[in-house]
Length: 468
Image (tube, rainbow, N blue to C red; front, side, top):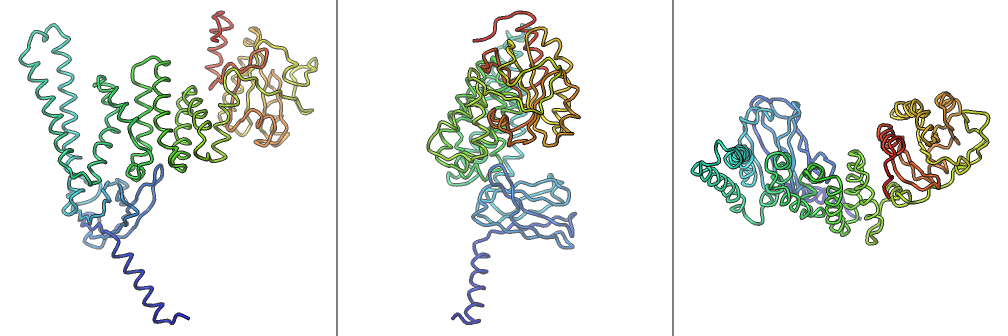
C-alpha cells in the first residue's frame, strides 16, 4: 500500500508538472486595480474559461494557459472589452492602463503577440488607404473629367501595388512554424468580405476560392475564434456577390461540396458545422441551399450524423419538392368550420392546392402568422387554395381557444412533437408550412404568410405558369 509520504510526493510531482507545462500571461494595468480578469479560449463555435485571477492594488496580474489552449484567447476585465492574444506556447507580458484603453497597451514580452499587435495596428490603415486608392482609380478610369490624366492614374496603380506588397512582405517574413503565419492571413480573409463586396468586387472570385480552401478540420482554425465567422463571412459573400439568385445557389452548392468533403474526415466537426450552417441558411431563407446541404450530408456514408440533426436534415430528403406528402387522417377532435364537412382525411378535400400549416398556441410566431392566414383564407379559397392547420398543442382547451375561430380545418391529437402527423412530415419547428397540389405533391415550402400570398397572387390570380 502506498504510504502518505509517497502520496504527498506524487501530489507535488503532478502539481509541479502542471505548472511546468503552463505558459504565463503577466501584466500591469494601472487603472484596473483589484479587478477580476479572466482568460477565455475557443473550441469551434464555443468559448471556455482557461484561467482567472484578480489584479492587485497596483494592477498586476498573472494568468496561465497550457498546450491544450494553443490558438487564440482573449482577456476580459469588468469593462467587458476583450483583448485578443495569441496562445502559441510563449509567455506574454502586457502593460497599460486598462484593457478598454487599447491605445495604452503594449506587449513587452511574447514575439508572436508583438507581431500580432503590430499587424493589428498597421493592416487597417493599409486597407483604408487601399480602398481610397481603388475609389480614385475608378474615377480616373471611368470619368471623362479624369480619364485622360495618365500620370496620376499610373501613380495610383503604383501606390496600390506598393501597399499590397508591403502587407504581403510582412506576412511572408513571419516564421513558417509560427501560429501568426497562419492566423493573420485567415483573419484578414474573414474581415475583408464587406469591403470586397462593396468596393473591390474584382476580388470576389479569389476571396470565395480562399474560403473554399479553408480546412475546417484544422485545429488552428478550430481554436482561432474565427470558426463561426469564417462560415458566416463565406456565405454572406456568396449571398452578396452580385450574381442572380440561381447563380448564387450554384456557388453555394460548390462551397458546401468543398466544406463537407473536408469535414467527413472529422465526425465531430462535421456535425458541428452542419448544424450551424443549416441553421444559418434557414434563418436567411436560403432553403434551396439548406436542402442541398441536408441531402449532401445525409448521403455521405463515412461519418455518423447526430440523431437529432439527422432527423432535422431528413425533412429535406423526405419532404423535398416533387415528393408526395403523407396522408393526414383527421382525428375526432378536428374542428371543422362548417357542419357540411364530412372529410375523414386530407385526400378527401379534392382541392387544387392545399397549404398544410403546423403550429401551436404556445408558439409566438404562430400567433402572428396563423391569424394572418385566416384573414387571407377567403381570397385564397376563391382561387382554389385550401388550408389545413395541424396544431401541436397538448391541451384541448388551449387548442380550441386558439383555433376555434379559424375558417379552415384545424387538427390536433394533443401529442405535440410525438404526433404521428408531425413525425410523418418531419416537423421540428413551428410554424412549418407545406404547399401541396391536387395530387398531394409538394410544390413549395413557404417560409412566411407574405411568401405564400405572393405565390397565390403570381400563379393563381395573375395566371403565370407554375415552375416544373
